[in-house]
Image 1 (cartoon, helix red, strand yellow):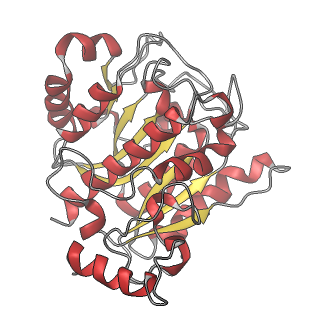
Image 2 (cartoon, rainbow, N blue to C red):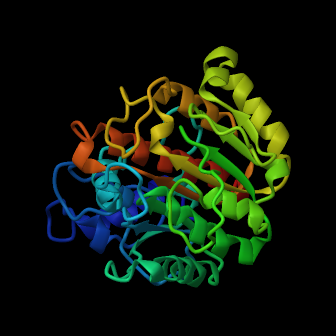
Length: 333
């Protein structure tokens, strides 16, 4: 496995082949490891300047988008979320995530797999299309980081992961529980998918945790809830410790709805709720979860049409980078 200096040298050789520094690492990159800075304001856009590729030979993580907003109950626009997160990730693609003592991109081979295709005129076929897309990646023993898209997409993504790993522990950052009762298993709604995940055994509610909630739903389905008040009162270090106690050594699917943040910090989302976490609280929790066995992850509900200066998409890109660090810490260090 190459180290960062070797990777930078390899990529620099390509980028300076004709005497001038090149951009467009999304297409020109040689080595899937490491970073090679290019101007944040130019070049082809991919997540963290990773190479666009569907060749997963030797790849640890494939980043893929699901441009969905047909299941939202309020404002649409999350179909532009994957693109928005990719754009803002260029602000991060020159340095390791702060407070970690390693860069996940040094030890993980990561590509941008592009987006899942589904026919917007056949919304009833979307869940199967997403599940098949994720299954295709997982069958190569490559992990998946999914960029959304409204939160319903997590259900077919979870189903694909459960086929590979069995029932999963769910770690869920959100303003909403998304476990409201729904008697129709075919209904597509971003507020009910974890109800179905629990009822069908895709997740094990005894070892699942929801963090940052601040909307009423009296039936927790047995999931441990650490609501926004708990985060503010206990502090992020105590919250992280509690999460690790509940998750134990189970395999974890980690989903982040960007509305877990207070709308002061994440206005670009469909269903904002005041009183949420600050970015510092959320990041501190994540950085103290090292050791949890993350096997799948997503960041969802970024809606660029309602964003301000890209701050919500930037938070989404930052959280996704942190998820890569957690995955690397679990399986590659």
